[in-house]
Length: 114
Image (cartoon, rainbow, N blue to C red):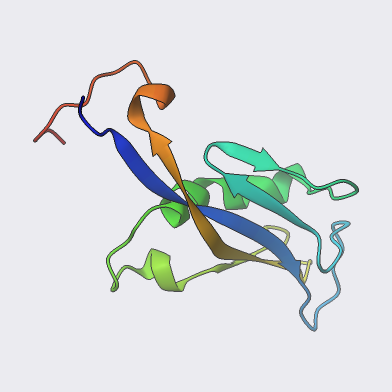
């Protein structure tokens, strides 16, 4: 049987304080985890849906192996989308997890295609 495993980074997304006041209900130290396709909010943590909308598009790329020169590897601090809010969100790779292609999709692996 063909090995169909692949590795993704697990992520921690944490609210970081700046010198500008946070006005969107963010609290320094609040965080959530990304493990595979799951977003895990620890008890008593919440995130604005607007802040999440600015972070979510970046998470799949941050989970994957990247070329050392790719800006996606170095840029890990995301500003709150509210221009009046001083919160920023730091995306940190915390460890890795193996996944199986066949457990994630019914589409077959096509070698040599896009």
